Image (tube, rainbow, N blue to C red; front, side, top):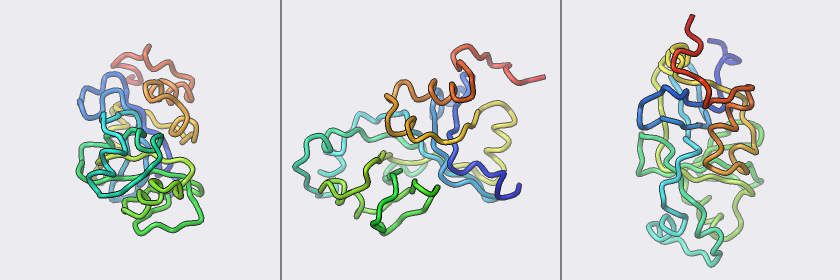
Length: 188
């Protein structure tokens, strides 16, 4: 694959027939995709935890109740003890950050959480525990076997669309009503 064929900064939409409980009915933000594999964060699986839980575990204080009640997501089955923040870029540079696009980065360091707690973080963000990962050629094979659809990233889906609607709204970008697809869609 050439660099332009990689799916960085795309949304991965689980097909209805994808039975793996880790990914059934998920939409994931593809942060890294290259010859070695892929890394994505599921953006529509709240854990039931909030920032208040994370801040308490990390000894971070905030007085902002809205921030405290922000949901934490299950980003995927790999390293669920580790936090990842998908966020809009700011003038700040965080300790452990990788750019995904011109305006979105993925960060996994404490400093961004401290900034968010103090209302000094990025304007938009999603915090997830864990990530989804694929080895060399694995994601491409899964796409070819109709496990996933992909579509360009849309800021609104990640940051403004209600969580329960993200899967359907992402598929609608492709002109697809995902609830009407069958498990044989795409097979010839």
